[in-house]
Length: 97
Image (cartoon, rainbow, N blue to C red; front, side, top):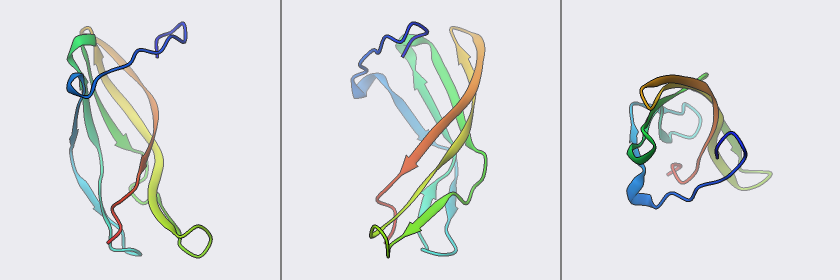
């Protein structure tokens, strides 16, 4: 989404996502990727997302039957060679055994 609010569709082949680490929950035993490098070469974007807190797992089995990781992450990197940064929200599902 650009500064004017216009969204651009990115086909999967134009996006690269690499997990940089992992975190294992002491409650569920799930192993989640933790920290990511996201690249969009066509837009000259190369950023890293770092969770602000590793343990952001929500265990809601009784209420919703779900356990997943969600939380705020710090964004830092470049676009077109210029520094960019901010905050992101990440949600991960499908990691609980």
